[in-house]
Amino acid sequence: RGVEATVIGQFTNSGRCIVNYGENRVMDVGMEFLHNGLPPRPLKTTFTRKTHEEPNFESLDDLTESLHGMLRRQNIASFKFISQQYDHEVQGGSVIKPLQGRGRVNGDATVIRPLLNSYRGIVLSHGINPSYSDIDTYDMAACAIDTAIRNAVATGADLEHLALLDNFCWCSSNEFERLGQLKRACQACYDYATEFGTPFISGKDSMFNDFKGFDQNENPTKISVLPTLLVSTIGVMKDARKAVSIDPKFEGDLVYVLGFTHNELGGSEYFAMKGEQERGKKYIGNSAPRVDAELNIGMYKAFSKVAEEGLVASAISVHRGGLATALAKSAIAGQLGMDVDLEKVPSYCTREDFTLYSESQGRLVVTVNPENRERFETAMGQNMVAMVGKIRGDNQFRITQKGRKVVDTTIDRMTESYKSTFRDY
Image (cartoon, rainbow, N blue to C red; front, side, top):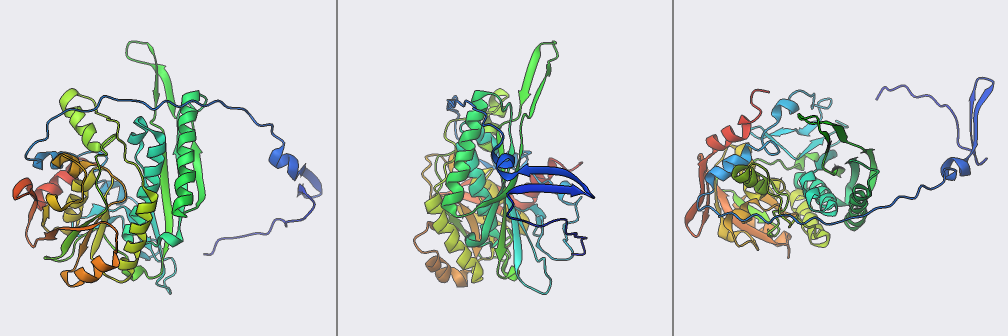
């Protein structure tokens, strides 16, 4: 790529690291000492799983306004003002860009062709949700890994050619409890990286993200970030022309939900929103999403094959904000209406709002040409695949339950809500 490179040395079998500056020897250290000379520093860790008040609020019959409220959440709303500040063309090789569809929705992954004489592509994505750390940092890290992988797979990456990078942003790392939380997160990284077969190839750590000072009454105070793990993925596609975007393309295409929805709203955006509305601070809950790697691996491998065969018109990963948010963002991206039957969603939830806003892992929303329905369903095999609706040709977005409208709105209204939060930035 035209970058200057200079040979400055060579590997030897001397067992020593030797550095010369001109005729002067400035370093001569044994490799054993270099690697193992620093005595181990014993550290003590403790971990206590926190128990929070379980939210107890009524489920509304009409969840239209709650969906608009979710689309305005800072963690969900459009941040295109950031995406547009950067050159994301990557020397003219961008295939899937940060903003997707006619509705210009922030996607979960991008695809580039680094070599323009090849159709092979590179997929980049990430996963992050520090709010689960309020419950358990193990689940937080596991969900970050699964989300990063799922975001890449939804775009067309192959699970067999995927690697991870970690970015820890932690707090008070000399406290026993914070170190215990870090240990839990690292254990999840090992468990799920090995189970998914996705190695960590790089990363970074940022510790002691704490502020110590005084509050408005001059009392000593300390503010710490939530224990946070950002997981990024880098993957390879055989043919970037088969990359999948998040926007539905045609009226009449079928809408599928892949994967199970469980009663997993602990640390969710929905609980946070309801708590802020009802008492001025977020609800947390106790049931953070859990990752079933074995189940998800089967789903992701099958999806990669149907995407490779061109059987998928669009796909979006379900994560922060749950199923309703994924459906809405997909519809906004395509600027096409949607009819969804909530009764057909594979869900273990007993409430409509929980089905819509649970943040269970391992799920995708997919649209498929009706002509490909049989091939798609057959190729997905024994994985949980449910056809829940259709793409409309007009502006209407409706979610029903046994014929009753649970959400009844328009693409224009959802687009307005989604883009309103950071409009003036």
